[in-house]
Image (cartoon, rainbow, N blue to C red; front, top):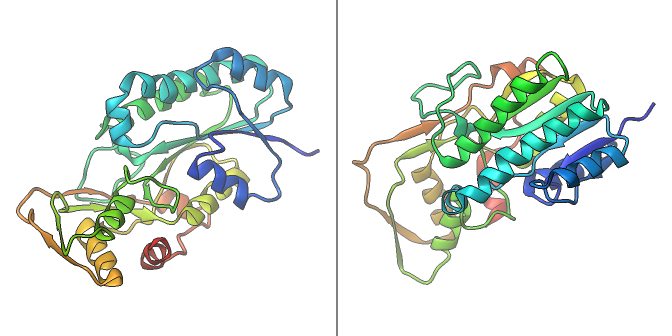
Length: 273
């Protein structure tokens, strides 16, 4: 018996990457408005959907902050409606939710899934609210998997994201490029590796919360240096004395499923330039 997979957010970066990298899976795309309950209800009722991948979200932290009410409706209320209709349908056998490392607080140590959530942004707050609703409503009813995805970059990302904004600035017309607020460390992963991680979770029908990241510490200063060298441009950093923040994944849990990152960060950066 062949099972169909429903997917929301299929036009976004991760949603489109999942479809491209899951060639043997039949996806039924949600083309409605995630904030409209009747759109979700019609989609589920009119299709035979056994598994659902939920990617629909407002992501850039600046946009979420500026348009918080709308982002809250999409990221939390939309997820709430989706979960409610899943429960009513009695069709779905497994539910995947794409969450974020922003539900965690900064930490000098690698962050495990057992760390107490403490969102670092309004975006993280909306995603944590959605996580909590999923856990409350689906526990002991429908198997669910929440993936807390750490940083990534992609050629389709706008300059609202860190690496595209750095590339855009360095490619500008100025002779020297001045950066501040760079004394931070993040965990970047190639979207192909993220897709493989999600495929691993899907094949295992994994349950619970999983970090998806590289487990490697990359400084923003290093990224600026890497891009500048490649483009043969000069830069100035003014904030070395500012407090540092770190958000790095502990990925021991997902590694137990025989997944591990394979792409080099430097090659990812070079492919974007």
